[in-house]
Amino acid sequence: MNFRYSFFIDLPDNSHLMEIKYLEYKVRNGDTLKSVASRLGMTGEELKLFHNSHCQKMDWVWFENLNEVKMLLVPTHFQTEKEKEQERKNRLPSAVLSDSFFAKTYDVWEAIEGSFQPDVKMNYTIDLNLRKDQMLLTYAQKDFKSDGNIPGDKVSDLSMACMKSIMPIDFTLDHQGRICGFSDHKKITAIFAGQRKELEDFYTGEITKKYVDSFEHNILDERFLLQQFQSTLLFQTLFPEMKWFHRKTSWTEVFYFFQNSFPVQCHMEIEQENEDDHLLITTLKGKITDWCSSREILWGIRPDEMSSGDFTLKYTTHKKNKNLLHAKASLILKYEEESIHQHNITITQR
Image (cartoon, rainbow, N blue to C red; front, side):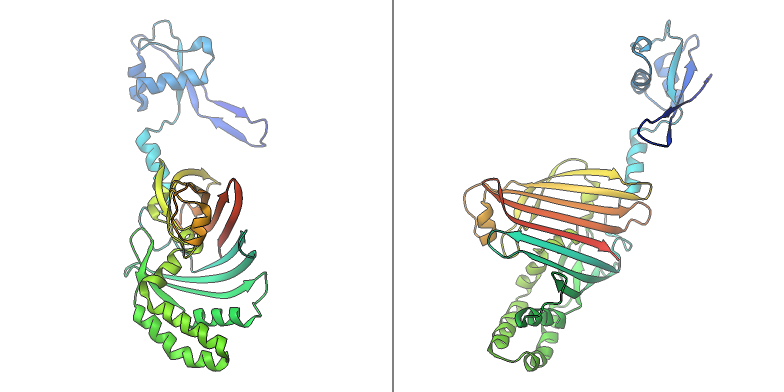
């Protein structure tokens, strides 16, 4: 091909130069859009659209034959739709859970604001150990603080001590990366039974006995205990389905907007953007589509009116290492267009 020159454009609002990769091709006798395009790996329609989008209107090409057309603007590097899709996939995390997706440690920050409860701000650290060959994940939570301080009241301290006594917990995962069960539920209950006396000796009193009785009763119910974890905003954010990253069209997903309530269906949309050469940001936005009110979601009873709620998940992943660097979630329940419950969470790889 007889190409003449390439062009460079100085972007007015940037300090760097961006190359526009196209050349002038001098049309020869017998050339058609199809014949020129085929040498570039394009269709005639793709070449026509490319040329017309880069030249002045008086130089547009309309027909397959190139009679009286003196030159065509052609790309120096053209990607087919298949090549573009493969390049997109290369930036994404694996479509199934990989060994490298989770880091060992994440710092978590949560804030809850609501009309029916005091505002809560807390931060803590979680440790993860994924054994992909067994589809097992060991989870431990530590260093819990409320408003930047270690809780000083007896009930909060006892609550954390009870949870700490059964950590770490081994969860089973599916190939999409979602928590689906316990590796050994009986081991969890046995560990707590063995530490119960020590807890009651340290935290004496009737309140301690009632709380420990309630805690033990709850963890004995395997299904209930699993749902307590699965319905948290933390678990719904930290353990996404890997196929979410590969979605290109809208879909319906089920989420818990409030722990101890029922799951609601959400209409989901996806947006992806390249933060830089190394990072990919995937944003999932959802709206409740179930017929239920925001207040009833809080109370855990299904009614007959439409709810109003928004759910946003944002993931930052590394294009090369395919691991999760950062995750954010925002959940808002509304009543008559006014927020009655907000829950935000930020998860950052340490």
